[in-house]
Length: 257
Image (cartoon, rainbow, N blue to C red):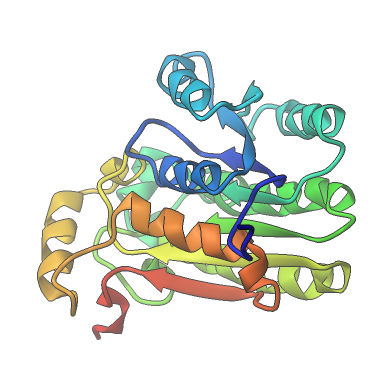
């Protein structure tokens, strides 16, 4: 029986899978299990051998390279989607980057170039995706991205990504407002610390992970399947009147001062 949670017939784009431990993969798995058909991207030739088998296992008809720093690659992804489906129902933006020297240093010491790169890949690329998705979402759709509570509070060693994620969350609110009249919704999902490839670049992340798990009200942090379950709900018709949110999925860890 069809329910409001059923994604059968919906087409989505997932950007940010690096391996089976990626948040983006947990979301892709949930979308596919609910019946959606997916386009999946990989960063470059080095990443493709890790991503392609996962995408093939998900039955994805579109498996495409996408480095948002390379001119034209993101546009080529959306052109392929338009040729294949003629529309897009949802997308997940789950990418972030900052040069190591800027990420590991103080925020006040961040170079202009490093700050610009972090903002471009981690935040502005979401706006570019929203703009490219807009004409393909003529009947509405959902735009998702991934953030972290270091956007609102100082988290030791999170450094430059704090201001960048704050900008991303603000971007989500403005996108939700501007595209809302067209039935396009926008959300930021905020998992707690998770052992992903992206997180491995944060200095002393293992310590942060252990401390967060011990302090979380549920004494357990979220897993990628938990993030996937929330993402599935947000792109489903059950969430059709919800937009512009930043939703934590972290075992209650965001409650702590």
